[in-house]
Length: 420
Image 1 (spheres, rainbow, N blue to C red):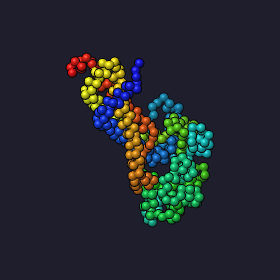
Image 2 (image 1 turned 30 degrees about the vertical axis):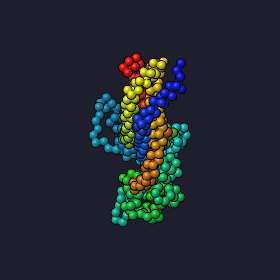
Image 3 (image 1 turned 90 degrees about the horizontal axis):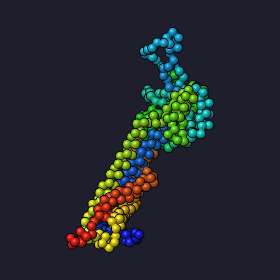
Image 4 (image 1 turned 180 degrees about the vertical axis):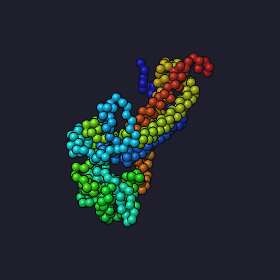
């Protein structure tokens, strides 16, 4: 029967006898785990920040009415040409309505759907911002401020003023920072906007909005749904977009198709709208994992070399152990215990130093006009990264010690003693 306490004691003695080499191996593991934790935390923090700028402001499903050619052309409906192939050139878009038909009933149906967290109606209209003799192209978005803030953190991007003033102050507007800079519009100032029908409307500036996407902030502005409907001369049932947030974002593609069919409207899911962005996030995460694992593998080679040298230097001790009754399996356990001890010690320190370095990065100021809501470098402290780090530390050091331990277990004590 194996005496585990004795094996651990022998492993401890061998480890301390070569403590400098053991310490070097442990430092290699510590450095690798530290960089692994720091790199993953920083890269995924960066991904989370970019997600908050784009994905968190993007509905999981957007219902809207697209302007497109009518698929049912008169020639296709004629019985005379049913058996023929019909080719139509220079097909123009039909003059359909730009709003969602029966939007009230659709929102009621969405509200009762258990898969939905909530929805936010929107009225979008192209306008001209008037500044003296200069006219700037833009878009006014009529929103439900409470719904937008709850579902899409709208108020977090309001850098000046209060978002709720849009519904509390009649005929008010919240300008994108780029638009405000071009118009030189101050808070409380009255600006004029011209609709696509040529009608002008005065609106009071109650705040600035900054998303971090400059091209977006140079044209977009926000007002209440009621003000946008009044601006366009439409009734209170006029809604151009319904933004839906789901409990499970992965349900967006099939549910978008379902909504498009049931509500007879166009629907776009978040995966389709942001496919390029999600690809970039996945690639950044993959790179951080690859670099971190590479560091661990390099540390594993260091442990392998140190244990190999230890075996050559401790041939006498191994021969004596086997001559006094220790089996090859016992010798293998001794050297595996040394390797795993180095992995646990180095990995544990790596987790601590990785966390401390992440805290340090999290305190470094990061100020840029494009991201007003971000004040320090972003770091993600997800416990999963620490679990992955310590698991890879143990696995790497185990395999680094397995082959030297296997070699030590096959040492013939008779050959060693006879050689001495």
